[in-house]
Structure formats: C-alpha cells, structure tokens
Length: 481
Image (cartoon, rainbow, N blue to C red; front, top):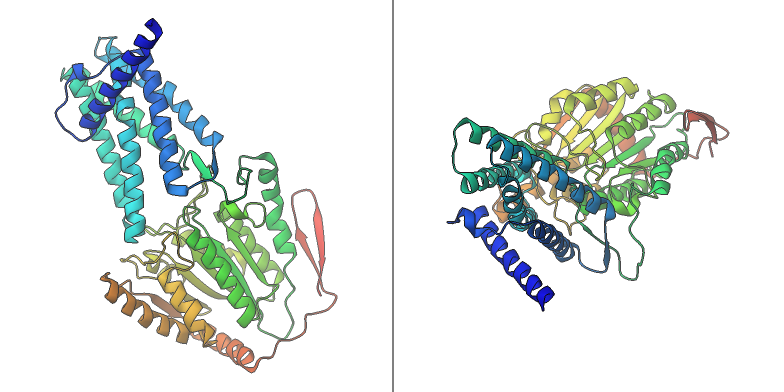
C-alpha cells in the first residue's frame, strides 16, 4: 500500500510540475509553491521529457524505427550541466534549497520547449520559408532565455546584483545546452521491412569507409578526351535536414549524364543518411579536394567543370553544410572563390540553388565563368519541401528548360520566367534569379552546345594513366578507357 501511495503521490506531483512548467513557459500566472520539488520529481521530469522527445520524433518520421543512442547519450550528458548551473545559481543567492527548485522548474518547461521547437520547424516546412529559419531560431532562443529568467524570478524574486549573477549563469547554462544538444531526433525511422538502424557516422565501419569513398570516386572518373570540350559535373547536396537537396543533385546528375555527355565524369557529394556507405559526404574540405583533383587532371584549356550546390542559404551568404553529429564548416563566397582559384580550373559553370545565393555572383564573376543563382542577394528562393524532388528554380532550370535546350543561358531565361509565374501565383515575393556570364565562357559554351546538339560524342581516350593520391599512405593508378 505504501509503495502504491508513493507512486500516486509522485504522479500527482509530476502533473503539478508539468502544469506549472506549461504556465511558466507561456507566461501565464504561476507561483513558486506550484512546483513540487524533490529528487524523484527530477527523475520523473527527465523521463517525461525523453518520452515527449521520442513521441515527437515518431510523429515526424513515422514507424518503424529505432532510438538513436548517440542522441540519447548527448541529451543525458546535459543533465549534470543543468544541475551544476542550478547549484551555482543557488549559491550566488545564498539559498542552497533553490538548487533543486531551479532544476525542477527548468525540467518542467522542457516538454513545452520541445513541442514549440517541433511546431516551429514544421510550420517553416509547410510554409516553404526556409529563409526565415535563422530569424525563427533567434526568436526561439530569445523565448527560451526569457523563460529561464522568469523561472529564476518566480522562485527567488529579485535580489539585486545576486539575482543578476544567478540570472546570467542560468542563461549561460541554457545557451550552452542548446548549443551542444543534438539536432537529430531521438527517434530514427527505418524503411518498411528494415530491421536495422540506418547507417550513421558514429558507426566505426561507416566512419572509416567515408575516408576512402572520395578517393575511390575521384579515381573512378573517366579521363578527359583531347580535342574536345569535356564537361565534368560536381554536385553538392550540403544540408542533410531535407531530402530535397539529395534528390535534386541525383536527378541533375542523371540529366547531365544523359544529355550533356558527363557520364563517367560526374561526382556527387551528399549529406544524407541513405548515402553514407555509397557516396562521399559534402564538406567544404571534400569540395576543395574534388576541385583540386579536377584542376590537376583535366585539360584546363579545353574542359569545363560544372558545379551545382543545393542547400539552405542565409542572409549573410552562408551556405549550410549540415550532417549531425558532425559540426561542419559553412561555405562563404570568398572561400568558394578562393578554392576555385587555387584549383587551377579555368572554365566553370556554377549554379547555386539556395536562398540569398545572389551574394555569390560578384565574388565568382570572371571572363571564364558562368554563374547562375536561384535568387538575388536580398531574397529567398522557394520549393525545398521535404516531399519535393527539386527546388522551384532547379526544377524549372533542369527538369524543364535543359530538357529542351543545350544552352545554359537560354535555359536560365526560361527558368526565370517559370519561377516568376509560380511565385506570383503562390503569393511569394520574387526571388529574382541571377546570371553572370563572361565573354570567354560564352564562346566556350557555344562550342560545347554545338557538339551536343549534333549528337557527336568522341570515343574515350585510350591508355591514359592518371596518378591520384588515394590517401596519405598509398597511390592508385587509374587507366583511361
């Protein structure tokens, strides 16, 4: 009987704490004695938060699936940090009993924070407004810090400088928790009929395989053919948070292989859990290594490198490279311009499908380069929904226009009109896709267009041997076909 009574008491206390946390998070009236403070309540609130997190993941990704143990470990590792911050804040206020009270209050608002985070992300997806994600993140962080501040004031009141110190400490702890917290869901869905966890970079065999994939794909590229403008394609799907970019790059590679004679001369860098054991991941360093390799092996006077990057972009022109649990460097216009210049590649076609991508036009512009962007420097682009195979601009450019012409400039003009009509129909502000074509690349592409339109494809060059560095410890010889 006693154990049943204790369990009932624990459940009632948990309900009171969750209600108080809800009111605290939504800035509704709440009092310090509305919380039930005990070590048991801390444990119950932690478990409740995990259940909510798991449920949201299942709701978002569906079943069947499995628990991501790496995400669970990272989340649990934050609990000692929260306890330490609460203890220090209580010491600043010279009232040790507040340590447990702070911990309970912050854990009690956790489920609300999880639901708001999920709802905000889902709303941005449905509205197709990825460009607002940065502003939404800032608002979410500001709200979370305000909730932490309110928790401290409700529990201890204002005590001048001591309260200010305690408030600053709790805010710093919360900010640190949000920074180190895993971005992935606790629940990882698997395909129907699959009983195994999806490949992850935390798995040793996958991690070590990735170190070889790029070398193998580069070594497998067909050699250039003397006397012809060979086109080499590099596709980059940089943000793993949406399958759209992965699907887009794969579709573009298939189109270019079929219509633009890039078969055997295409390489893709993909951030997607489905391709971890098949293709090299998209990182800034992998992109640099790919460009450096091409610059050292193609005929830079004859051949053209076509680079397509699909990802989210920000108003300060960062291109998102995202693949949890890795913390990847982001790409800037100056960094991309520098790596292209260092590679030695002369003739370039660069398409950037991202919000605010027009910020890349001027840094990349020169006489030997064609630059195409999905938007200007001050507007987002649209269409990166989770169930899409293309963004709007890329669909208009590749899946429509480039199936009818071999001219990249003509295809751009057609795509720009198509996107403008679609944006107007949907009530969106114009994205204003941009193009910058140097006079020299115009002539080079005209020669390529003439060859492709004639249907002529030269035979592969025979007996050419390319020496490439596959790693720091071995060399690989690749014979031309």
